[in-house]
Length: 117
Length: 108
Image (cartoon, rainbow over all chains, first blue to last red; front, top):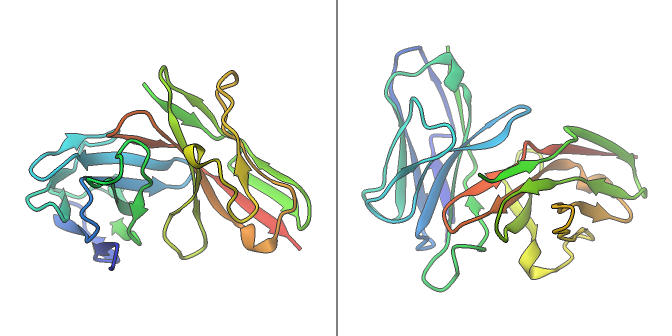
């Protein structure tokens, strides 16, 4: 049981390049989330998904796209990277058919450190 | 809208001293509140949650609906408690909102 796995762990992009961050969970969780962590600003929600085939915008969605084609995977895409997207990105998941999603805790990945030059 | 405020970005205490990390929230309904911790070079993990009313690693947190607060407390801080602490609010089954975090340093 690996929990939540994020790839890659590190990445350096040039302005205008694109990339996809992959998040995979093996806990049969319904809800998945992408956050970015910046100094002094805590964790801010980018996009989230309440189930396979569904996505929704969070607090800071601009410049990002997501897809949830399979229940276990949640992909975060940057189509044209900007220096403002330099951050640490965390994926998280929670809630299955047994647990209530309302008060179940989040399980986090190890994070992806992205630098855009 | 739901909002979480952690007024202290940095907090330093000496080993053995009491510690309190403040968290205030804004939400019109009945929220579920959590404390998450991130130790150096580790992933974020759940420390405790309001609904469980438990004590983890000596930490406790009481929900005060009148003051809309969920402060984290420990009577005697240990050096291994040094970490980043985040307060979080779940106001619906969908979104979890985090505060900006408090970096706790326990001095020897």
